[in-house]
Length: 235
Length: 179
Image (cartoon, rainbow over all chains, first blue to last red; front, side, top):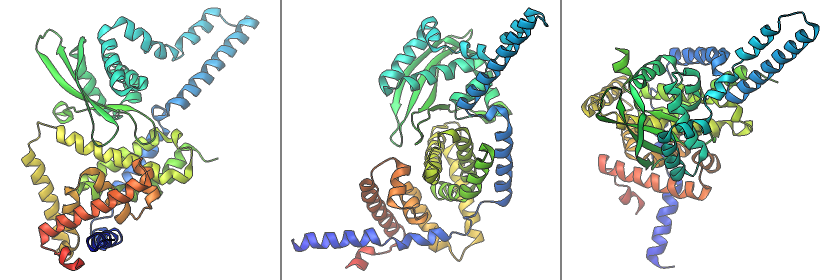
């Protein structure tokens, strides 16, 4: 090995093993989180977990399934003994939340709304992920239907006080004018920025906004976020 | 079998400091570190059913923290209506506050933190995980979703960039030292 090569190797070995100069940073004085913050967040997490809205999707579907089965069984039993008015049993089945699932039938949405379909195809073409394309459309549709619970399935935002102003803002949007202008891949992680254009109701001027689809959070789930002037709406 | 709610509390108790430390090193901003910690554990809670292997809980949570931190910084970049001057002042105010509380240690950590902020997010993450949180190459690779070889190479590069950054700022002559 040449003298120059040996020097470089020696230098590399030294720098690989010697990073002690960074260590003082581990002793920065304000490293520990504020006690109040830690306690409040712990309480908040416990409270949210107890709240039925925060139950994960698969578990929620299980609960809906068990609930439907129970209602169905009870209805059959009651009908067989003729102890109740048959219409009551029917009414119970109608109350089951399965109707919510039908409201977000992706195939139906794509066939009924050509602009949804166009955006779906563009996201699919760019990401090669049908799931990403689906959640993008469903994210928009949940805003259109002003459905906070459905919105939470697709968004990084899950606080009601933040979702409500966003929904109010989207109320003014003419959803039929939504279109993708540009898709930009992130350099930092598997996510894309989707720039969309739209018109507000009774207005002709085009507006733009950016939405981000996070394709993989290191743990396989995907969701959408967007920049929104929360402060302005909360004033 | 423990319930989901007790599991999330256990995970929070075990890792909230790691997440906060990572976020604070990444942003050098207490408020942003708290936001990242909060968002991370909300995501953990929402996706707890995806955590199949408890032995990987730390890398799973830190990977969420890493992505949450990158998301937050990127969102801040895109907020056009907030003048950069205000952001700069906010950061400066935080630094001044920190400096006032510990003037003695300023030279020991403040310059390194500032240099760390100048690294691109990927390098910054590797330095935080490997040098400051003392995670193994394997754990770091798991969090970053890359190979162990890439972690080693990028860590080496990140340390060198940090060294160069400090050399420029402080006049530390590492080249002389290595002769």
